[in-house]
Length: 199
Image 1 (cartoon, rainbow, N blue to C red):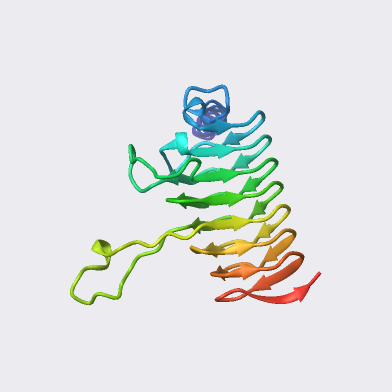
Image 2: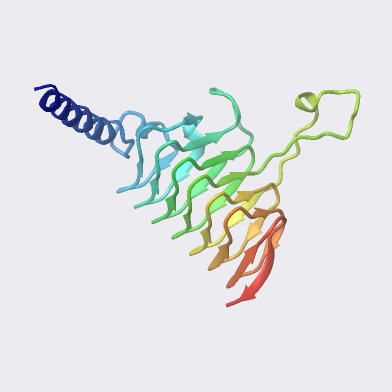
C-alpha cells in the first residue's frame, strides 16, 4: 500500500513540476515578456530563471531559447538606468544553455544562430583592482563592448570578458576564457582562448 501511495505521489510531483515549467516560461505574450525592449516571436526564457533585471534594455530576436537558471541583466540592480539601449541584444534562433549568464552594462551583441553549452558567462564589465588602499568593490569598473558573430558555438563553461570580439562560425572550446579578438571560421580554446584550428 505504501509503495502505491509513493508511486502516485511521485507522479503528482512530476506532473506539477512539468506544469510549473510550462506556465512559468516567459514568452513574448506573457506579462513578464512584455517588459523586454524586444522579445521576438517564438522566443522563450525557460522556468525558473535565476535573475532578470532591467529587461527594457534587453532585445531578443525570434525563435531564441534561454535554458533554465539563466541570469540575464542590464546593470547590476533592478531599476538601474543605463547609458545605452539596447545594452544586451541576442539574435534569432539562438540557444543559450542552462545556468548561463549574460550581464551587460554598455553593449553585448550576440548574433543569429549562436548556441552555447551550459554555464557560459558573458559580460562587458570587469572590476578595477589597481588601488591597493581601496576595496575592489569600490574601484572603477571599466566597460568594453562584447560581440559574438553569427553561427558561433561556445562550449560549456566558457567565459567571455570585456572587449571580446568573437567572429562568425567560431567554436570556443569548453572552459575557455575569451579576452580579445577571435577571427571568423576557426576553433579557439584555452585561458586565454587562442586559435587552434582554422576552418
